[in-house]
Amino acid sequence: MTRMSIDVSKELHQMIKIHAMFDHKTIRDFVVSAIEGAINKKHKTREVNAETRKVLLESEAGIGLTRYNNMDEFFKEIGC
Image (tube, rainbow, N blue to C red):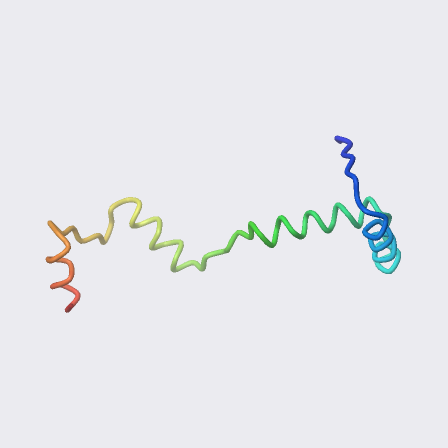
């Protein structure tokens, strides 16, 4: 485990203490939980369903792909 030290205002320190107390956590556990929550929220990995997973694997293997020589061919094919 690595130790980290940060400077916070007295007001923020008091808020952390109060919220930690309400959550029945130590300040350390509260801060670690808050940081992990922020990281997970920002970098949330999305699960894909089985059909999407199958299509992604097939396309990576070149299965079911249609190749076009240019964008005009592609747009004509899809009706644009």
